[in-house]
Image 1 (spheres, helix red, strand yellow):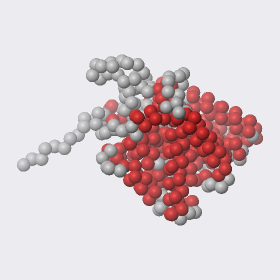
Image 2 (cartoon, rainbow, N blue to C red):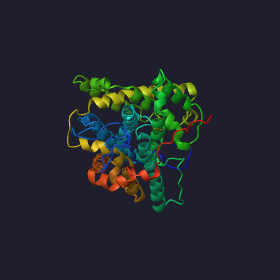
Image 3 (cartoon, one colour):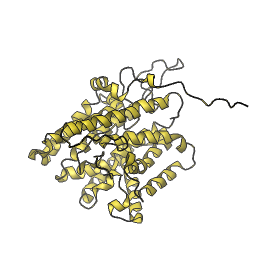
Image 4 (cartoon, one colour):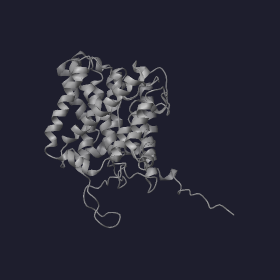
Length: 394
């Protein structure tokens, strides 16, 4: 956990777990009624071939990425549920496996759809309304929720992200840095260098900065990827290879689950907090970067290429990310996670099934329509025309 008293994101094994989304995988992309024609990642929201801005056909949305985001958000919801059942070996191994790559997966996809992000064309305004505003709204909402449920004090701090909201804070900063990474010669190497250096000292808990910098390489990796890289993962021969890699990763998770400190997978602790020196910690971080990247690639080989009943749900994963925490927290507040039947193998299976159902339901259109005011607010009234420097008088 961060050096703060507030729960934060992935630390649910030690504290109550909490949720996730802007599409955690591609900026705000929910297809809410009246939403802008372009998703935050720059991906057209239209499903068909309606007229584009120039009067020509609009590009069709690639179902592969929506499918990937849908399955990724299911991993997130399942992981947050498993965090409460870690005394069961089945849950403990699955939890470690999922946490090794589920956020890197979202972040890589987010970076890929941020390749064309600039401060022009109203994208900066979307960053404010679809990332900044939801961050503020859900910081307040979750803090009030905890307080009303029995916490001793009401603590609201926009500088100290609460649980799942750390991702919105990180995404805001990553997006702002995009033009920088697009103009330097070796962006990924530089990002990895920054990430490794960030773990060598205590940067404090403000904005969950260790995690922002530590996961930055995955965002920059996404920025550097091209469509043909994903085409390689879509090839038929890649699917069995990916399945073998995932199986090996799952097996490896069970082998190390009692030997590896769980705090490594939260990407937010400096080396001294982990009880290791900078040399050992740097080697461990490099190994985790490699393992996470390989597992992300392997997972993507298993994603369906065509449209299915769940494809449209992948455009609203931000909703599931930010809202499912209210469900997992409610189960904690009411004592449900202490039920003996849950802490059994059949109980873990039932909880996983419930998590998949909740994750799916929170991506549906009724939820999008009822919650778009908070996640995709129309706030044109707060903006002014772009201010440009005036000409200097001679």
